[in-house]
Image (cartoon, rainbow, N blue to C red; front, side):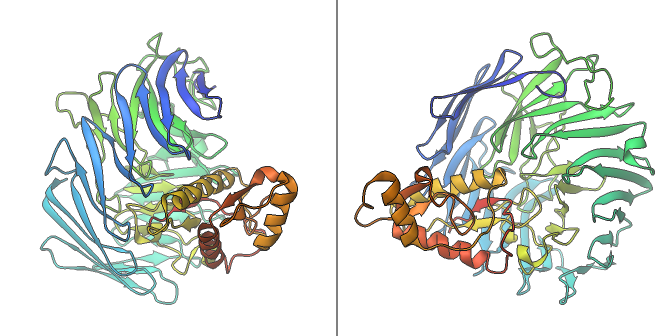
Length: 520
């Protein structure tokens, strides 16, 4: 049951995968289809219409639904995304091309259409050896220099605007008049900008649960505020206005980590907020007219790109520049009423009062392409404690604002080896989501093979070796036959080397919070 009182039901297939989702008896999506190793292929909307994803032989999303057409991705031989195009609107603001340096960092983005107020957009970035942005060029404008403290990677100045930090590296002043204040846990609790003060509060899990705009005291005491609720996996499931807040009450539906729908309270129906934000009465559901149901169309990263109304008309669209510093189009269909969605890159919520994105444990500044706070896990997240997504924002995500495990599926592997690789990555993702991915001491492959033989009574097939789906170096079951399967030695040892290199400086017992695919 959602906090509003609406009942979301997930129906499952015999293999444990979701096949349909409904709310109060109203079908949201149905006929969910999957590829053999777990990736979602498609679903049908409950009313009409479809969402589709097409994969290539390397397991990469090559195309997905977006509004009236399809969004297509192109790759270079190193599996880096070189272009994103909208098949239904060629030459539009949805069409981007990209270039990279030898370290896979994005250095150039081009769009021949008008994005925001800029026509024929040409963006260029330069970096130092640690991954700090040292300059940005927009079209024919002079380069904007970024001054970095080499000892700490703190951003000291952007152009002519000097920045200030506290002793632990939190940004206190961005040089444009925006000032910030933090609590003892280094969480952002207050921002003042253009004469407006906004306050925030977080729960014991680090989730932001309150926002109050134009209020200088504790957020929970603000007469007009927005309260947030999350599921057990940390996904946002509801935003609820309290008092006279003008924000809409909305709830989100998910298919694992993929956002699929928004439920929005209609004016006149009760709030149903979680902690006193109005009546506890349910919105009564779509059947009784208490809420509107909108469908989300995510991209290859699970970033929502399009919102569709009941007539499958786009009412919101976000065709952003690579680092996300582009405002959403809240009225893409002209005469229809404007619509606001605050979801951004995975794990992020847009804050219009600051122009930044709340990103679970930190706050992301899309204008500079980096976090405003140092990584709370320190150098275990990498040498650059402010960098976002390894400077590869169009194919790497950071849903928690922390450093996770990033594994590559090699382009030269056979199709069977790539399938083994995807199976292991999907299992690692589930383990990370469940909090079961913890670094332990390494074990030898030969030990795993002997356990396999003992559990199954069979020898390991020729040309293969046994692998734990949850790798023993990260944590797993040494003696459970169900956690062992034959795999390609090349896949097994490649992943083992990648995991070992990334976790070399990570202490034993450290939990790995996320697993992503780095496609190269």
